[in-house]
Image (cartoon, rainbow, N blue to C red; front, side, top):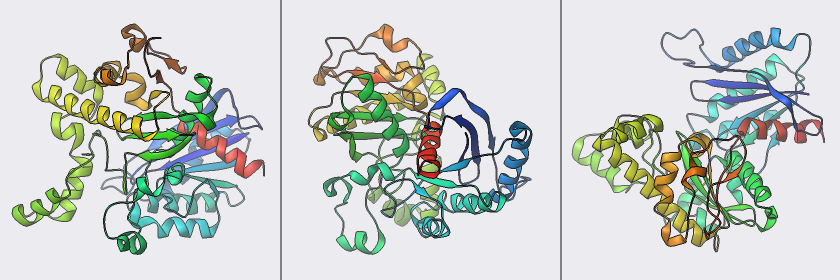
Length: 384
């Protein structure tokens, strides 16, 4: 069966057309087609909105389909708030709920809702499923999700830790437990989703019990352009003493900070190359990023009552061996030992890079959020 996977960003739309078996398993060559439409609604762009972008997707798929029809569509939606703890079949009420959650993800939820409406108009009889970044983290206990602010901020405004990258963390949890021959229901681990956006999640009994991103994806680790954790008084100081507006600070923290702000590069490969060539700022940026990550690993080792694995995934986690080494070199106090040779080897398979003597296995596991969304879509829309 053919499943269309849609990922609507604030000014972009990524898609994959994937072929799965009736059981929701990938075929031998699952990706039938894929594409990316960028600069939606930007000055000079021919694509004015996500509805028009989906018209382009339909046109691009016409030749690929060659008379076949799409069986269902799965959508990634960034924020499901407390309303959605699992994937959901798309209905008008579900789309309205995503709209109502827009204040929690103003750059992402509105285009996602627009994409859902546009796809419904394009293919009115097509079953659709939404998969939320936040759903996997709904199992966090209150001690992890509540901020130490007036409780009315939570009850009145919904201010709490939500967490993101849930689809990836969920998928990689299962892959790692299977790789280590541990029942998922008994697995304790630390999943490190490291890409341009980055987050760490503490897993106990196969479920999320804490995660580094918070009310928004800005919190936590050092990322490509995002600052991660920050003293909130800095915002007040910049506003009162230096004339910054809230909007300017929000833009800088989200788009001009992280690796970019410290090193001038967003791509980890460029940062590593610059540091190797003697760039002091690049070296300092790597020290900050690896130190911040190592602190989270240590804290989450406590949170899960002793991790059975430390797992690297996503673009940087899977491919940046020198950065992995910098992080692992900081974990000697946890008894972590890794093989330099295994760390540098590339593979598309889940693999262990720690030595037999390591107290905690270190695993590299490839993530595939599109595959996970497609499988969830088959399960919910076509096998009910």
